Image 1 (tube, rainbow, N blue to C red):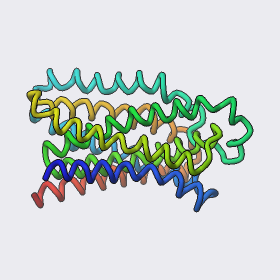
Image 2 (image 1 turned 180 degrees about the vertical axis):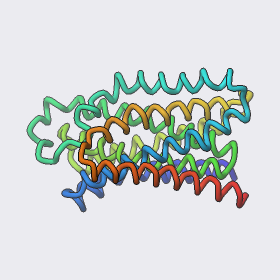
Image 3 (image 1 turned 135 degrees about the horizontal axis):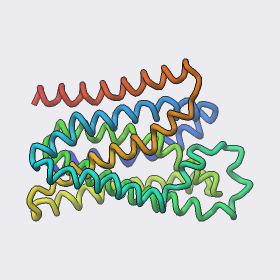
Length: 258
């Protein structure tokens, strides 16, 4: 039953890759608004999942002296990956559509770097989801929700970069979906590998906590700081709080119901 949960959750997260296609096709003038809301919401969701769910479960299986170095390893690992593969996301997190054709040949390598970074990122998403479900179904569902919410701005950025790099909408959609499906591979791989390593789930949760903290603090919060208008900043804060509250509520409700 746990394997079925893992496959269903990772497939669902993979399908979030289609949000870029839908947003750019159906609401081309609303992409910035969607990013504004989703980045704020995902920031709260990731921090809530890390501090209320993932890390407490990890500490339940490991002494803090063993878990905290793994949390740090998660932070540093994603720093290294981002430094080499996702650096351009900060330079152009959501390129305007009007710029997507002019530099197709020059910018083509950026598209492939984006796909390579997404492939690695999504594999770790699958590992995180599997580790969470192997601990408990409520933790798995809360972790899946946090990852799915974080993937919305991530996939919007990726899709915009692929268009900017000269990919057609159809090709960008297929490649984004293909890289998204690596989360399924990550989840299944971890499911079969975990029984052979003592406390692997607890270590994986500690690593996941580190990655959630890094993504929220290093990727999403800097995007929030680009907004200086008081009214929109207050709206950001409200969506961050909403993200925190929803993950906490879902986790607490499922845990109580279980």
